[in-house]
Amino acid sequence: QVQLVESGGGLVQPEGSLRLSCAASRRVTGPYAMAWYRQAPGKQRELVASVTSGGGTNYADSVKGRFTISRDSAKNTVSLRMNSLKPEDTAVYYCNLNVVLNSNTRVNYWGQGTQVTVSS
Image (tube, rainbow, N blue to C red; front, side, top):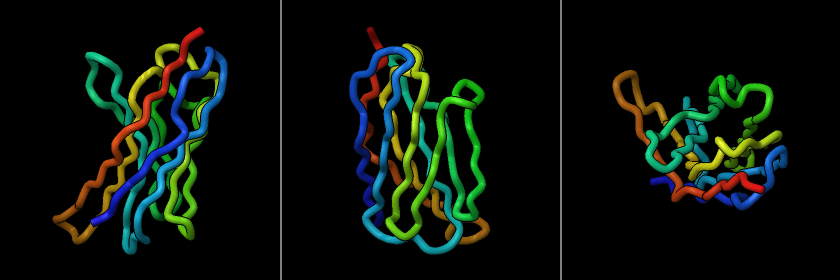
């Protein structure tokens, strides 16, 4: 089992910045990906950004150029730097860890979520 603990959410004005962090309770070995998802009221959870154990990154079109995901394998953490925030970025942000156990099996872990509110 792996526990994920997020931090860094809060209230910010439009065009402001926030940094979210997620710490895993233990080191993960083997192929994996860590990601940030978000869910706004009345909407489905969506992928915001992801980073693989190999360092590859992926971003939702809506956040490209504004958000940056990074990981620190030594500290078992993943961060999301969010710049130029917009009201439509308001959501609960969830940290996700997806571990590849074998060619047929993956295991998903989720954090408890952290609220990000962008409002003047």
